[in-house]
Image (cartoon, rainbow, N blue to C red):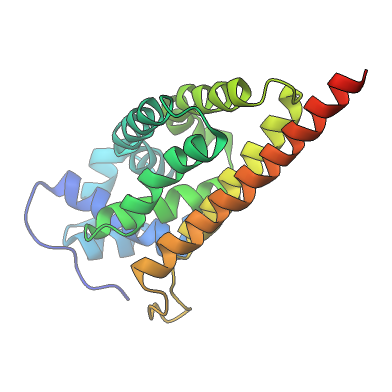
Length: 220
């Protein structure tokens, strides 16, 4: 069982911190309200008072940090667009995830793990749509930036490639160098290197596909 979260701050925030940790480590089904309350150091009734249900608590945890991460992704993309290459665009998407998953702030690491779990495993619209509202516009801007770099590729191919890339990043975030006993066996440098390797692989694949389509167009 995880140790109790620090006993400072209002009960609502402590519950969100505890829920973030347990939802990230145990999943939606495995995290129990009474364990969340115990970890937060509050009575179970306070959970019902603030959130009303486990579903509402889960939605609130997903939404709480979403605006900050979406803003990070937007700023990273804006900086990369001056270079205008597929490697730069994919690196821009990866960078905020690397920074957060390697952050000394365990809350952000827990949140990234939870977002990855939600994205790859637990995709119930009634629980995730509120958070998706924050991410969908910036994901659309990344797709548009990739399309601008690969004018000869069909949008469907770019969509499939970007979705596969995003899921590859999420798969690293969902279990960032820990085994089942939560023992770290990857360093932050290993995680950074692994994610950037994913960037290189997908950027090279898109560039090769774009070159092939461009050559085909010239022959027609």
